[in-house]
Amino acid sequence: MAQIYISLGTNIEREHYLQKGLNALAAVFKELTLSSLYESEPIGFVGNAFYNMVIGANTVLSVNDVAKILREIEFAHGRLVNAKKFSPRTLDLDLLLYDDLVLSQPAQIPRDEITKNAFVLWPLAEIAPHLKHPILQQSYQQLWQNYDQTSQQLTKKTLNWSQ
Image (cartoon, rainbow, N blue to C red; front, side, top):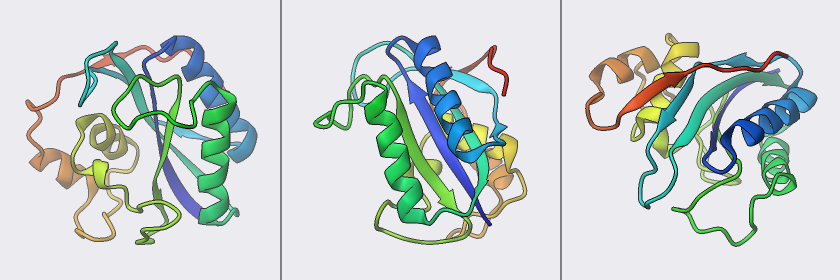
């Protein structure tokens, strides 16, 4: 059984797509570990603020199958096939970690944005503080403590979802 971590982001009809995304993930992975919900400004473009969080789960699915399922969930919930990297999103699901694998295909794992974006690192450090980054060999708690926490503003929001 593999331990996976997924980032979820939405800045279009945020409450609606947050609920839909969590429901879809729970249907596939059953028991989820949820970080707090955070609001953050978009990076790389001007637009509505995002809701972001990180979800942990266990799976017997292969890394390829998980990556495929995440894309299918995005497309089923309004994600455009030709969406630009820095653009508004109904639902953005990224596989951050799959056990301690280091891969470039079918997705970059560990995801580069873990150490670059507070909206990924803070919630990951919250639910997996002692887990070590497979390349840097530092815990996510250490990485968050060393991160410039003034570089990106995050606001904790109330998550209204129950499994």
